[in-house]
Amino acid sequence: MSPLCPLSKSNLLSLLALVLSAATVAAQPAAEKDPRWLRLDAAVRRGMAEWEVPGLAIAVVEGDRVSFIRAYGVKELGKPQPVDLDTVMAIGSTTKAMTATLVAMLVDEGKLAWDDRVTKHLPWLQLFDPWVTREVTLRDLLTHRVGVGGALLPAATTLDRREVLRRLRFIEPYAPFRAQYDYSNLMYTTAGEVVADVSGKGWEDVLQSRLLAPLGITGAQLTLDSLWSPENVAPCFCCDLVGRSVGIADARPGTNVTMPHLKKNGRMQVIPWRRYANIGPAGGELSMSVRDMARWVRFLVGKGVFEGKRLLSEKQFAEMHEPQIPIPRENWSPFLREEPAVHFMAYGLGWRLNDYRGRRMSSHTGNVYGFHATVGLLPDDGIGVVVIANADRTGLAPALVLSAFDLHLGAPEVDWSRRVLTAYEAQERETQETEKRLTDGRRAGTSPQLPLSGFAGTYFDRAYGEVHVTAEPGGLVLRFPGAQEADLTHWHYDLFRMSLRGPMAYPRFARFVIGPDGKVARLSVEGVADFVRRSPETAVSATGR
Image (cartoon, rainbow, N blue to C red; front, side, top):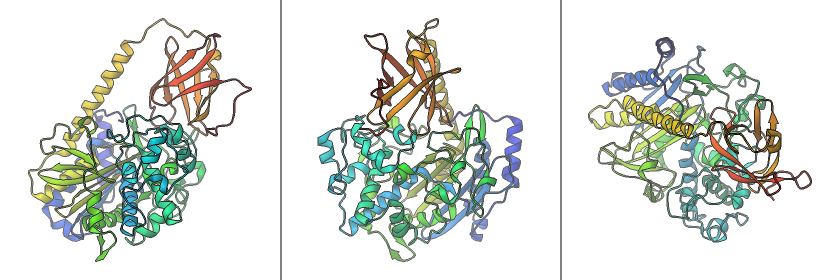
């Protein structure tokens, strides 16, 4: 999580001034007279100050009507341009429901079945276990029960989508097949490739023709190329844009875009947009405005019907919102673990499912560094809510979804923003305590067995290919294929702490293993891979072969 620190008085006043002075837009005049949405408007304003969110947009759909839609704040911290209803922001993993919907449409047409074996459509696909390769189905991919991780493979490299999936055969499973919920972007990327294979065109093209165009969504940006020149975008998801600062003034002319923001060292900072097309169907570069997202939510509230036309059968819509695998409590959002109104949580097909005040609830969050989105539905009560914000991992978005639900239901009002913030702050304290325990266990006065130059060299893993370790004046630096760099800081003995250069450090321990010849034999990076050191004679390009 991003650090959560109390607002200083100066920061609070500055942020309030920005929020209150920025244009606030309402598309439905009736919302001005509805006391429910006046209270929601007030909750948004309070929450933005509490969470230090520079810009946000929200829409509430009741039946087939947008009851409330507004935009708040600014596109870039410290700049006056206001967010409006057509301002584009990244929507992250809320895209997973769109990919599942495309599968559902093809199921309606008899071109796919939920329980099709994946290799029926992608015969080239191989997972680490040949039996799992043979048995894995579309339903498995869409319910996070395959047990394949590898999250850093697309996030820290510039490998394209097909090459990332080709290397799945080298990634050992994190969990047994079909035994537990294990969230995986790469499995959704695989499902998107099935959609592309069956449709005869790329996932982005299928999304545009089968979903976005029929819903009248005209402002969606499927890739970053229409928003930014390549030199103004970080080259991979975890990468930084070295030696260059970017603002909305650098966006392509005529675009209505906002900058992403991330809190680091207790201060909200502007960061560049970043490439993530290599997981596209799982929440890559797709960006939309709240006006367009409201059309998507109308389709969802209509259970597959939009403006009187059925685009998805009620049967397949219902299947998507049926629990497929339970989500353990430790994987729940921290503010829901002790919430008396919530008793269970499961994953459906593209949706997290739980009960809320005795009703069925479907929702999904989307985090891309610098942005957060949440879409929530009470499918039996005819209400859907979308919130998108230009601040990273803010709990304000899901808090506002619950606030809107309470107002729709006439339930007792809860200060969800404060409740969620309190839970996030408690989680941050737990993280700090864990870090303190690690630091307390660090053995002072130790040194590596070799000089830093002895650890330098080329290391190889079949999934990641070649990585390079260099000894530089500041210490050891690890470079992944393409773009990502990480600092390796000595911890104790031959153990180092890896910290990615970029918006999120993703700290992991890296251990060098000395061989019988007194030289480094392997580099084991916690939760990533075991890299074998290669001699200059055997080093090869990063092909994964």
